[in-house]
Image 1 (cartoon, rainbow, N blue to C red):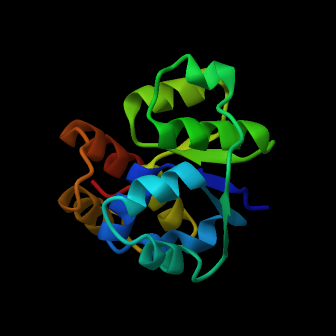
Image 2 (cartoon, rainbow, N blue to C red):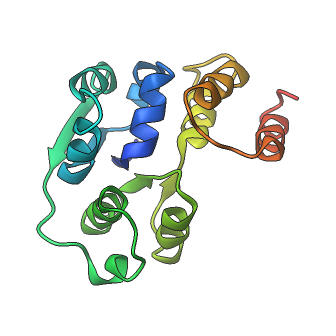
Length: 162
C-alpha cells in the first residue's frame, strides 16, 4: 500500500521546474500540501500548474495547520518545513518530503518517514515510472537542487547506473 506524503516547498518547486511532478504523481496514495507551503510558493509563482501536474495520477489535499508542534518549533525551521513536519506528525504513517538538511535532521530525530527529491526519483525508477534516474537527476540540478556530486555518484551506483 502506498503511503501519503507531505510536501515542503523546495522539493515541490524543484520537481515542478524539472517537469517531474507528473512522473512521481503515482507514488503516493495522497500528496498533502500544507497551507504555509502553498503561500510560500504563491509569493514567487503560480502554484496551480504544480498542483495540476502532481494530481494527474493521484489525489492531493491542501491542509491548514492550527499550530506548529512544539518539538518542531524548537528546530527554528522555516514555516513551510515546520508545517510539513507537523502535518506528517499529525497524520500517522505519513511521510515528509524535505531537501533542506536541518529539516531532514529534524524529521529523522522525530522518527518520521522521510524522502527527498532524489529519493522520489529513485522510487519512481524502482516502481517502473522511469527507466533511468540520471537524466532526472540532471534536470533537478539544472532546476536548482543543490546536491554534492559525490552523493549523486553514490546514489547512481546504488541503483546500478554508474
